Amino acid sequence: MHITLISLDNWGLNKHIAADLEKQGHIVRHIDFNTFKYKYPSVFHKAYNLVLKAFFKTNLKHQHYGKEIINELKKNDQIQDVILTIKGDFITPESILEFKNYTKKSIGFFNDNIYRCPKIKRVLHCFDEVFSFEKEDCEKFNLKFAPNWIYNSENAIPNNQFEYDVFNISSIDKRLPILKRIAANLASQHSKFKFIVYDKKQKDNDENITYIKSHMPLSEVNDYINRSKVLLDINRLGQIGLTFRVFESLGLEKKLITTNTDIKNYDFYNPNNILIIDEKNPVIPIAFFENEYEKIPDSILSQYTLKDWTNRVVFQESPSS
Image (cartoon, rainbow, N blue to C red):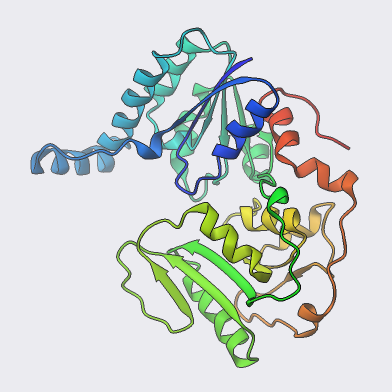
């Protein structure tokens, strides 16, 4: 099959989808519109963009993304069997509708929720099929459910000597106070941890947190993960869809600390491996670090592999069981 993947791959995760599809023998093109930089031609364009965002729910950057993506689609030498778009809410509906001129089937996947990103709603009708990692959105808007995926199981490095007890990397948002409370709890019991927050403006200063002004390459993130015994996951307000921290922990057989209570409803949940904490009063028992990880059966784990994800989303096959 001829498949084009369109995504805002700011963390470098989606390139694994393209690689997996190529490994399966498909002809794949990845258009990463995170590389399409937009610069305002003048201060007037910047002011005009403020008007567009405030009153017309669009902006020049999203229009730019759409135009550049369509220019890239025109370079394909034939109609695609599938165009898969991730983060379609960063593209105008008009552009996404035009994608259909270049494919037999247009599929959208969202690993953000509509509560946090309401712009998702305006593009749902533009696709032939839409998948979301958010169960509530699937029920409310008649979408198909697909969680995120394990991308890093082959990166596992046997390691009994860890530099950090807990690791987390995230972008600056309303989760920061929760992260600080968790850091304070870990520091009080002399646990070693590495918390990294991506913040362009870097206004905050906390000795327990490392702030970075540019995105960290995924290879460097994976290096920190391999040097850590346990991963920390903090879900955003109103979101129960599972983040990549969850699937990184599954792929590398690492324990997980999370604030997401919905994780109890997944078949891989094991309280020995996954500690659910109260975000207002996080308590992390030392014993959680001392007990060994209990291996998840392959029959369960296989449902969350990248190959299973592409089968479900791209090829519309039932998940493994």
